[in-house]
Length: 169
Ligand SMILES: NC(=O)N[C@@H](O)C(=O)O
Image 1: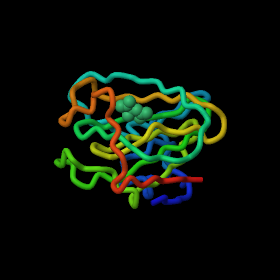
Image 2 (image 1 turned 180 degrees about the vertical axis):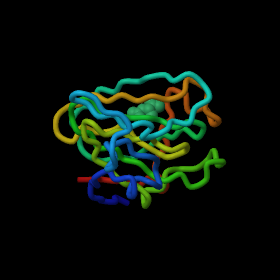
Image 3 (image 1 turned 30 degrees about the horizontal axis):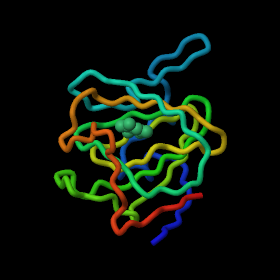
C-alpha cells in the first residue's frame, strides 16, 4: 500500500513525538553583545560517550520512502548547512522490541531550514533526509558506541510493515 503525506514545517509541538527541535527561542537572549545574541542552553543531547559526526551529501530524488533505520540507545542531532532538507520520521512503538518495523501510518516528513536542527529521539525511525529542492549537505552527531540492537550494521534498513511505501510532497 502507498501512503501519501504532506511535508510539515518544524515546530516543537508537531515534532515532539519524534524528538526535540533546535531553533531561536521566542524569549530574550541569555547573553548579548555588539551585533550578537546568544541563547543557552536551548536544547540538550543526552549522552554518555564521545560524539561522532557524520556528513550526508543528499541528492535530488523522488520523495518516496520504503525503509528506515533507528538507534534505540542514542539520540541524534541533525542539521543542514545551507539548503533546506526534508526529514521523514516514524514513531518508535516499542523501544525494547528488536523485531519492530516502522509503521507507515506514523510517518511524518519535516522541513528543516538552514538555522534549524533536530534531535531525533532514541528509537525513532528515520530515513536519510532528502533535499527539499537542490542537492544538500547535512551533518549528524551521535554517540560513538554500539547500539543495543546492532544498528551499526552495514545495512540497518528495515522495511515498512506490510511492504508499504510513503510518498511526501
Ligand atoms: N540521519 C542519517 O542520515 N544517518 C544516521 O542516522 C546514521 O546513523 O547514519
